[in-house]
Length: 152
Image (cartoon, rainbow, N blue to C red; front, side):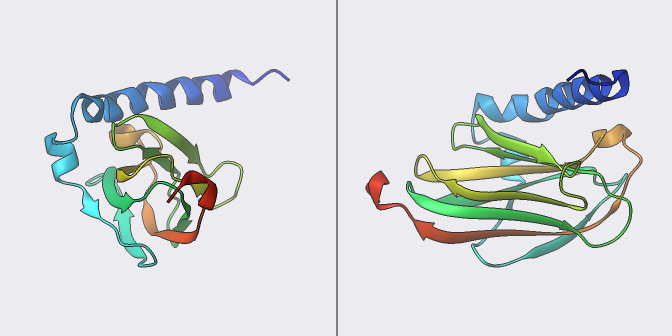
């Protein structure tokens, strides 16, 4: 199936923005961007806003190898078009997505954590600083189980 030119442009912009936003995180975990990340705790929702003044935010959480987690981003108000990316402790992109397939939410369900360490969530609005959407969201990371086959 061929994509429309507007979809191709959207994905190209997304890829460029991701490279700009995530690139510095790969160099080392102690970058100023990672140092300014908001810590998350399993099961505790965080509600905030993305807009022109704050088009993105970084969150971190500690996870153990073999844990099975779910990440849920729900849009509460506004016209926010969110992007959500999960980076492993080395800064490598594990998963990412937007709300295009799921309406006004982004869900990462049943992810088995591959290695123990501090994981980073990059949450941004589409278009990053150049984007036009804004709104309030709730982000929730939950541990839903532990995989015995991973040795944890």
